[in-house]
Length: 561
Image (cartoon, rainbow, N blue to C red; front, top):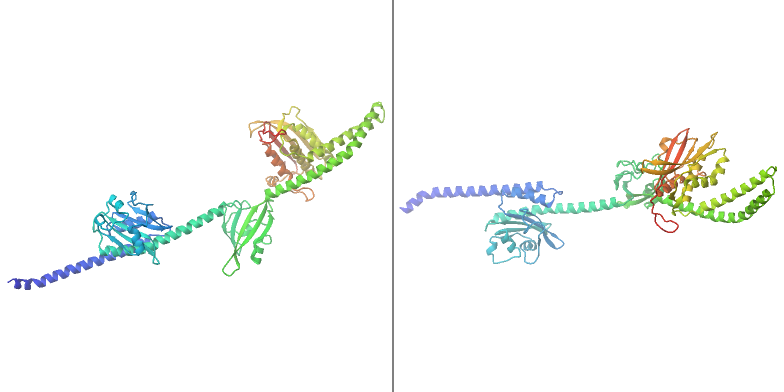
């Protein structure tokens, strides 16, 4: 009877078993397909600019639909250490981000060394113990999979899953994790390489930008490829698409002046000094070839250094050397002339004592005596002016500065039939300053006024001193004003007249340093120079100095004031 029942039921049972097996296979295939789709989804969602935290976030969410886990992390090898770079849960400190796994008896290290997945189904009761076990127990992880991250068969780290359940992972899970690790290894390695390249690029760019002078890279057609400043080396030409010679603002196409042209031809570094045609700033420009695969220069590094101040200092040193030479000459001249001048003045004085005031020779003798004294004073002023001690401050009267300056240059001015009108403020306060430097400013003002009156009929220079309430310092200030009725200055040029070497005079008439040096002297005295001018009417130059000068300059006794 039993046999009969079996025979009757067997076909139905076999059919049911076959259906169940088929359903299992279909379900397993569907699961595998879902897992492969998730791997592809993860690979597409990760880009090289992502951080490690962003990568694990992209992995974590889709994985939960095909793999159960309570702990997810990946470690990377850095300088012989295995460091957890990202983990979930994020707030977990144990075995969290930044945790270092030592190579001695470590499960992730075992997976890395053996280059294969390592499965632990019951960690708490496992006979084989690893250094992470106590920490895993703290976070209640009972089973885990560690898969090596392999790139070109070289391990760069490990991908780790943990579950609070024992035997949480099947053989299929084991295979899936390894497939995921292989794909993730490529993504993570690309991200790491991109990060290294980006970091190196940033470091180079920061180094590039840290150079205080201007650096830029150009190609063979003089296009600017890279530039270390947003500001142009010539103030106002910062369009990165401009040519090298346009960036340097040389008139015309400028290539006849560009050292890069010669460097491209010769393949050797070249240096030239170029003066900006408008600002008169001076640039030392060097071109260094960058060689391509063929051994020919394919690009050029151009180094632009503003040497205007350096040249100004060199010129000032040169001027100082000339003044020193003049001083030595003046000393010799003074020594040679003092004796005959003393005799002339003395003899004229003796004869004057014996000559009546009504005598027709009296006035001639008086002129001889006065001219002798004036000649002696001019020589003394020239000697003193040439031997300046630049930074010695002491009480100074601007009235004395004006008088001394006029003694030096009034003859040069008056011989050109230019009238000098002097108006002195007799109650002028004293200031702390360097008299000889201030005389240099006044002399520059007077000589510039003389030059502005060249060819002008009825030329006149007004020199006056005064006291004002300075709106900038909110306190009293003393002034020297030198005005002329000469040709004046165009408004567009007023901003350039204090630039070193800027001059509209002939080369034999000036260096373009007078006003630049004068401005420097004014600033040393905490003062300033103001200019007002109208073409065809004239100009006024004003030196404005605060009454209380708080410069920390050395006095004759070597003290700071």
